[in-house]
Length: 406
Image 1 (cartoon, rainbow, N blue to C red):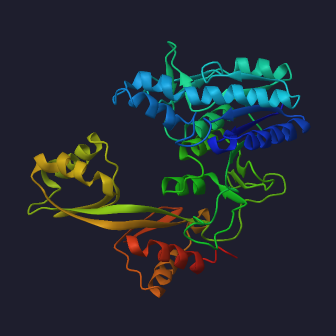
Image 2 (cartoon, one colour):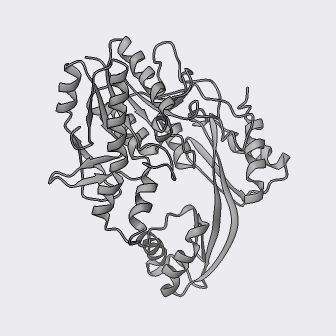
Image 3 (tube, rainbow, N blue to C red):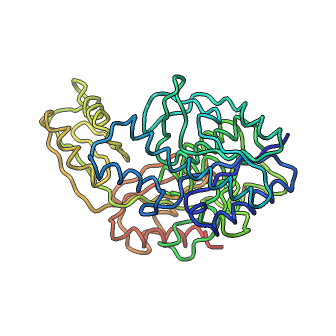
């Protein structure tokens, strides 16, 4: 049996209209002779009655601290509610369906409550459901340990559930439905000329997700890439095909490569530039290692790192500055911190091995008199640190320079 996995986000299942659209997408897949597994998020966003944030607020209204184990019990409720409501909706459309928790679907995780990792999937119950001609509706964002403890998968967990089930079921395709028409060349709120990208590679999407794009979680893309299962990002509320994500080879009559050096842009706002100054060589006595071990131990992610004998520079989120200062204070180092920066990046598999891409990036920014304070690069992205007030102008300039609207 050929299988498709369809994951629907909170805004897709929050209203009756949204759920009717979900039923239409499921019916369309069934009409193609596919077995359908639906993965659902909790209904709605913060403030809506059954949204995860609302449920957490209910418990914290009694006592602020919730043990991680109990928090996972609570956070898994929203998805469970969604599965039953969605099954009822499908049945109202004459579609036989059964609801499954993550554990019932065979999603086995480690014991890291609130941010568990999937270690195994045993989809026997799902196969039985599909072989009976039913649609399997699975609660996303959750799993169960080998000893029966309920766990949740952290931010983007429902996307991760969808991809992991797709791999376990050897699905033809995993569709991730949201409230936007796929992945755009840039954030349309910041660059009005941004347009949808019909095709992307796994690596490009991972880079954009890690660099701040929020349409799909990078872990979900990584899982799909490892299993070589194509992903499609689509809107529940339109019939547009959205963005197809694969390894760069042809799928049907669609060719991933579009001939452009740069595929899209990403950005992270509210960054702080941290400089550590020393009068002695930091390479001696393991000082460099100690600095980064201390920051890692405090749960602080650093980026755009530059190391020299007498100074180290890196960027962190502005809201982590005080935490970083506190963590590093026992080392007796001089810290210079400047807030008000943003990281802007160009992403594209087409830039691999192509000379002159950085020169074009600098040219585009210089046209708008935007200063660059730091830069890093990899095979598929180049990132520059600019002032926060220049972020939108930088994105617009780069979108124009690399002709992404054409």
